[in-house]
Image (cartoon, rainbow, N blue to C red; front, side):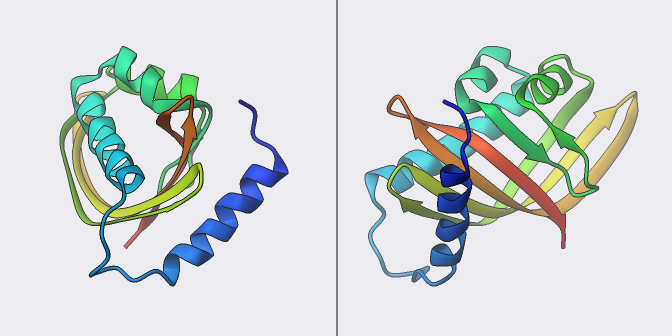
Length: 149
């Protein structure tokens, strides 16, 4: 699956629509539950440095943005995580929201993370926006952008 302008436009429209959805009081759909599980599974795969699980959860066209502005492709992100260039010691997600529109979903949360890179410990607390796409019946991370809070 390749990213087209139509995909990007749909993701943008979904982001605006998600902001107007009621956060509480509505029943969670099966797709919302599946996206929430995929978000959780991604964190577990990052902690375990599990290359096979990461590969299954990430779109081939992944654009993974860090809060400092660095962008990674799927290959680079997997090399960093599965190659243990960055070791995830803990990942805690709070304030999660998910909005699904067709085969697209927007997930937002605050992420507190403890890592080790080149033997140096680090911690961060960032806001995260993720765009997920349903591909072959499973949800895959298409885009992620972290931002300082």
